[in-house]
Length: 230
Figure 1 (cartoon, rainbow, N blue to C red):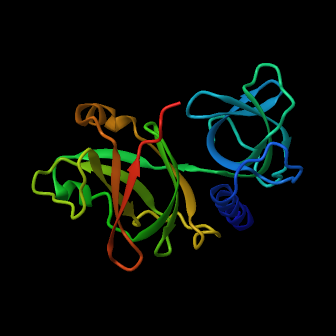
Figure 2 (spheres, rainbow, N blue to C red; figure 1 turned 90 degrees about the vertical axis):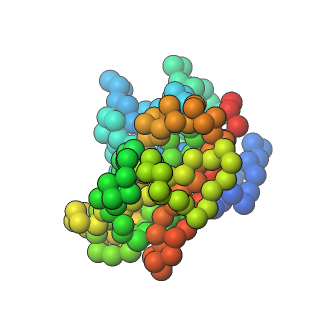
């Protein structure tokens, strides 16, 4: 999986630095997307968080065949040929299974700290009001578990705040040993944000600020604005 992870990171960088040219004859991935796999009588297809269906008429990743319900990240290109019953027909250049992280709301800082204080670094990938998707690199021998926490403790005072933004803490519990051959590269994670729906609506939030302890032991803050609605 090391090759796949590196390929997908490179593909994401490609999207960030180049524009989509429909007339281009180059055969390369034009985007990355986090999806859920579904299985039909004729094979598998993918569903986005917005409910759009993607049929992979060309699937070039022999190392990973998704099962029903698998969360996956795809490096893909949209093809012009339509497939009846699907919103998009795509060519998949690379794919990898994504692990779901957890979400929690705690009443005290002590309770929040039970979810772990392991050091990590992460690269932002994609997000919406429904999910947060990122690439996390742990600092240690175990991937462990990841939990996105909202702490209700009034004495908890993040160093970085902004009007209209909800502060969340990325907790990393390294006590569970889930080592693998690609642990030094990290892994892709998705977080379901539905637990925070009521909080987001009450606050009229513009986005979130995620706090984490970096591999150097420093506190880092990532401010995310909600994407524009389609």
